Image (tube, rainbow, N blue to C red):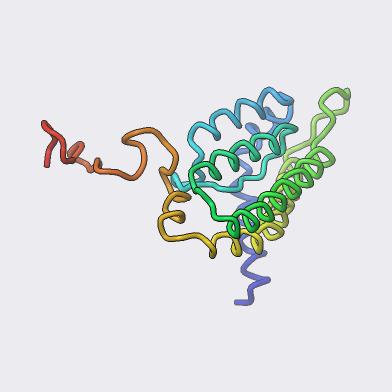
Amino acid sequence: MTPTRAAAIAALIASVSLAAMTPALADNMRGGDRGDMRQHRVHDMREAGPGGRMTLVDFRCGTQAADRLDNRFDRMAERLDLTPDQQKLYDAFVASALTAQTGFADTCSTLTPDKTASADRPDLVERMETRLKIDEARLAALNTVLPDFKAFYASLSDEQKQDLGPGAGRGPGMGRGDMQHDHRGMKGKGPGMNG
């Protein structure tokens, strides 16, 4: 199977599976920035993508998405304690990501219907097509950022790379550390733990 065909099949499967999500998408489109802000609050609190994985760069359609991404990058830079050479690579990565986020949000605004106009709501097919175009724009934005991120990531020490991973920058007990969770409860080194 060729990569082009595999991508087309994956896009088709994603489009069909998104049909169940179109009412939620339509509700988010009607809600204006309110829905977008609510979505970002939840996302910022967990900073995790599908399956709980860390989402370092997650492009969003909202008007404040670039500011939120910039704030996330500021928090990340504080945790990493970058060298001057790493800082240059980091700055290039951040500039690339923020430019891509702004372009992605602009694309979203041209693709989504005007919320103040009295135009008819798009039908299910139109909504799925819009979602697919947004996903394609998100993929293009990620591909734009990837080279700068690779260069930055390659410059990091193993410890710094761990600080970018799942649970990094969270409160006690929510990331790496002495506490471990399993199906029987908590196991750790402290008194009263199931160790």
